[in-house]
Image (cartoon, rainbow, N blue to C red):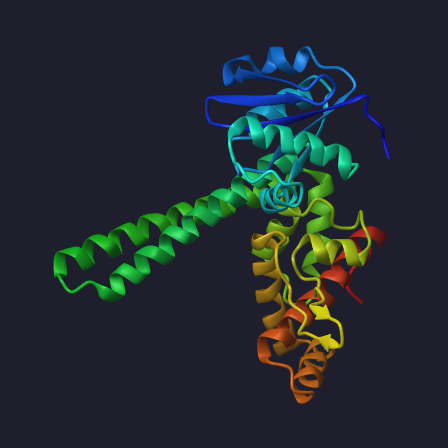
Amino acid sequence: MTLHQNILGVDIARDWIDVFDLSNGTSRRVVTSDLSSFAHGLSNVLVVFEATGSYERPLSEALEAHGIAYKRVNPRQAREFARATGHLAKTDKVDARVLAHMGRALELEADIPPDPARRRLSALVARRDDLVRMMTAESHRLSLARDAYVREDIEHLLDVLAARRNAIETEIDAAIRASQALKTAQICLRTAPGVGPVTAATLLAYLPELGQIDRRAIASLTGLAPHACDSGHRRGRRHVWGGRAGVRRVLYIAAMVATQHNPLFKAMRKRLQDAGKPTKVALIAVARKLLTILNAMIRDNRNFA
């Protein structure tokens, strides 16, 4: 582990950030337009902040430009740490202080900054996800619409959204082909059953740790690891939760396809369901097995056997 002299906790808003300095216990506010100057003035620190989906991007880019280590944490984990340490109030300053103490108490490791090609791929895949969600919402509205004009308007919008989705998918394919590392990884992933172009692109964009960590860690990261729920003599049912929802969703779909067309995964699903496991539980187990195999494939740079 890399030890840092100091840890800064940062709570991020749209127009500013609140910073708590663990070394001297002081707080300050920095407007978003001054993030580059803020990062330039740092040295030998670890900056801890929550993953917000978009608002943290200017901060992470400013820190990367000046070589400053940072760690993005799951907002749920940060909130649970706050409650566990008695910080029940929630304000920007309190959140920044909690994040700084969380970084120290848990000895958090700095993130590995994504390369520009993967960062662009992530933006494109996220945009495709947005378009698919809009298409799903409009399709639901179409099923309920009765007025002829309204139905025609929805159908026209669906055509527009489908065209934009297709254009984004073309750009995603071009972005992958433009990077030798991404192209090689995509070719490898596509040899596995159930892994199509959308699943491969999502894994490359949202799971850069694939092939870099062990099978237990990668399963936990994606929310596919079963968590115990035991107390005393009681042995509760294991549950999966948390993790990266977008990755888990495409792996679940890939598992459904794999159990229909691949003898290995088909037999695994049948064995679990014959043992009384619900269909969803069996598919989650297959998705976890598939992820383990994909992780090893990328690690060893080999295709599916």
